[in-house]
Picture 1 (cartoon, helix red, strand yellow):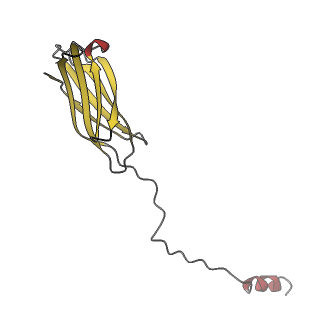
Picture 2 (cartoon, helix red, strand yellow):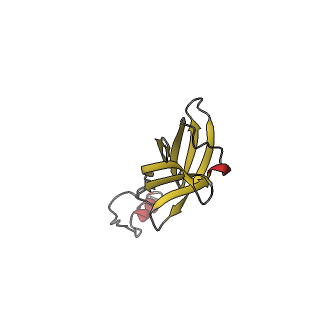
Length: 138
């Protein structure tokens, strides 16, 4: 009887009931990868600089808005080597990423026909999208 009494006393102790009105289990963090909608690489003569100017521009969408960088890497299709790379800046007034470079400050030759440009958009969780374009010469 001595062991039965403590066990019975535990059964009559007050209890606490918790109701959870949540819709379900907590969801983990989700991330949408950036999506490059379009990209342009152009080289043209600029009379003001008296040099060729390279322009890189891309339209990137990301529903959670966490794109942190967009880069343009130029490769030589003849031998596959990386030639030069450029980080693009965000312009909120137009909603695009862009970068302009005076030709003499780059490793690029505006008359060379075998370049290809990889645009890469990267978000805060390192998700990314890559688009490849051939540069236009104006």
